[in-house]
Length: 293
Image (cartoon, rainbow, N blue to C red):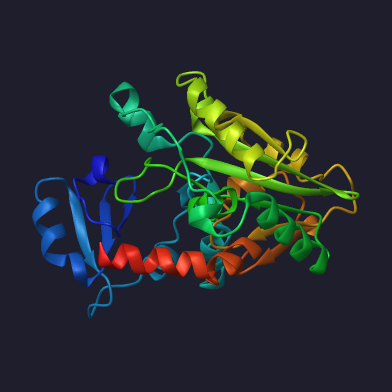
């Protein structure tokens, strides 16, 4: 959005049609957007102002077929789009903005990871994975696919710096129940061919062993290896009885593409999100120290 429009705020949606360009943002950014959109060709659409239609209402009335990059649209966003009477999104397999951006687009960040072990987290990775596995069994699910970076950080007691001002790193994770065992796959940017950060891999391997995870429990893979087919395979979708838990707000259309609808169990909050929300004593002390600092 920033590259296409020049807008640097944290919330905004750009729409480009064959003959116009529109940009929706909320009241926090009216002045900033008006200044930054000057000369770009984008018309500012001030959300919730009189006479300004919501994006969904505008799209419905315009009778346009709206294309999206499925890796950037959540299941809940697509659901809301349909609920408001809009035609289903057309899934565009190649991001058109990226195509225009071409070779000038910066490479995806790949910061070194840092461990956030039991002394700071108050609970080991093995314990957290076991709790998630029990929650999946309780819901009749056989696997969970994770995309929310904060949830992945919490589950694996790891932190990073891939997004400015956020202690997160680019990753995906799949937790799958296999009879009596739990198999977890963690996809890390550090393992991509253009990064190949052996030191980070060694550090994460050692960290997971120290946190009670054997090699059979957690497998590390390259971030670039994650796609719809990998998600479905690791989630066990070749077994017709598989039930895959997906969090509606953070699972993208692309992630769910190869998981049959009858095998999806859609939830508002994953077990990881619910467990993460309830802070233990060590985490509470950490919050206090952070506040003081």
